[in-house]
Amino acid sequence: MLRSRIIPCLLLHQGGLVKTRQFKEPKYVGDPLNAVKIFNEKEVDELMFVDIDATAESHEPNMQLLRSLAVESRMPLCYGGGVTNADQASRIVATGFEKVSVSAAALVRPALIREMSEAIGSQSVAVTIDVKANRLFAGHTMYTHNGRQKHKQPLLEFCQQAVLLGAGEIIINSIDRDGLMEGYDLDLARQVRGAIDTPITMLGGAGTAAHMQALIDAVGTVGAAAGSMFVFKGPYRAVLINYARPPRL
Amino acid sequence: MIAIVDYGSGNVSAIADIFKRLKLPHTITRDHAELKVADRFVLPGVGAFDTTMRTLKESGLIGVLSDEVQGRGKKIMGVCVGMQILGDSSDEGVLPGLGWIPGHIRRIDPSTINGLPKLPHMGWNSVNIKSDSPLFEGVDPERGFYFLHSYYFDANDSESVLATVDYGNKLPCVVGSGNVFGFQFHPEKSHSNGMAVFRNFSLL
Image 1 (cartoon, each protein chain N blue to C red):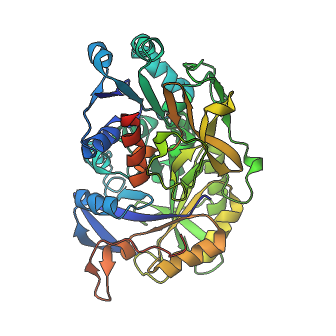
Image 2: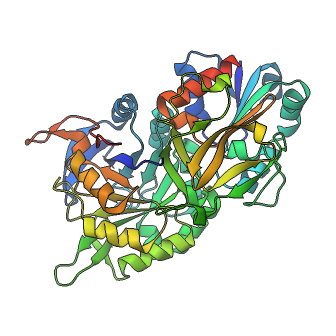
């Protein structure tokens, strides 16, 4: 049976790994290559890297770093951050990453999703969408540039458009819940699951394996991604790379 | 010596890294002389069927590989799209494949899959081993392998289906005919099961 994917999501910032809270207060948690080695030993399902500087500082993906991570990795890899064209996506896949994620560039120019799927195949194209819950009415608003730039298009409409253009996976990242470790936004997960039929991955809020199980119970086979719970231990957020996962998987 | 065929598609370095961990002699190469002295081959491949086939054609390696595999009976394993191009043709493209294992590459029919998600088939799935081939020595079929695809190898001869995966229908995920083998999943990204497959292939 196809199983849910439990995915550590690691943020690249100034050459190291960091973890944020609600996209703020980046805290240094270690070296990316060392993290890959530890996660290899723990036999993780998938690993995701996001360069949080790339779009904000308009720089290209760091191919040299990606190559060194891919050579070391015995698990499937996804990269996001600063991807603006299909040629970059092809080069990232050539370094040994299985999936390439786009966000800001696809919101500005959705045709990029089609160009990428033609170049590397739909199965390798992920679209990551950062969202915040609206305070005044139900629903969520899409953001890019580390939560600083707001987009008007309704979230579910963009999810459907992305799938029609060839996205193989939609990754939803909740800015409100980032780093809080209080659980996923399950209503949001249900809404997205109901809108499209491709694989989806939820990120933002997971603090325990039970939170991941709750997500799986809510939407079925899913990608359950997390940052904090795989890099911190205990109430004082001591850095300890670990791979706690729901026991039933 | 195992030659990982470096024709410009697929994850050659991750595969080489596995052989390095297994302490097995290997090389990443597109050099004809080196391919001629190798005793077996790994054919990687990612992306669309036609793009992969065109890249292989432009590399100028089809002739030498064909001589060694078809002519001299050396063993080869195709991985992911490197497996699909071992077939005759694909729903995904118009170019002919290598035709070393008779079969057609079909798109998975999403209507056969109960519930969500549908396509692509993404993640870890168990496999059903259909043969007593030593390729599966030490493989835990329940733990399975990492899959990432929307097309599968529909082999003409059911004898050449060595393992299947349940995704809607039972889809062939390992095929083999004589000295030619293909793996739909990513053994280079499937931890200990993947390592076992590469080790077993090296001993065939």
